[in-house]
Length: 119
Image 1 (cartoon, rainbow, N blue to C red):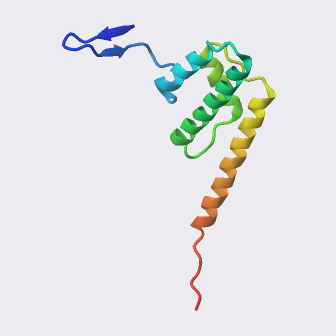
Image 2 (cartoon, rainbow, N blue to C red; image 1 turned 120 degrees about the vertical axis):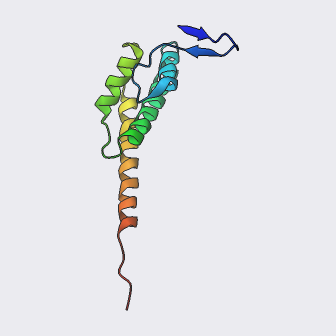
Image 3 (cartoon, rainbow, N blue to C red; image 1 turned 90 degrees about the horizontal axis):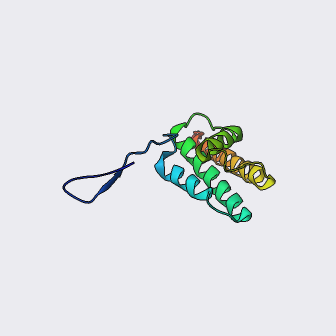
């Protein structure tokens, strides 16, 4: 899977990226999270991964926000079904993040309103 150049010792990865919009680093993070044996740490890693994925989706899709179900499907796809998102802390974390992004959108909208000058 790895290829070494003849002139130098740089190793180039040739394995495919499963979901290109998330990138290789997130794919490697998911692979690492599947090796965690402590259940609490695994849940925390899954929440962190989902937050990173949501942030990447906001960068790529500025017009709309992908839902929690999409994130769950993508996490299960990247982990090969080894990471579970069926725990209450995941739902709470995703709701908090959605609420925070709605608040920031409201602030942006307020800042865009043009105020008429006083006479």
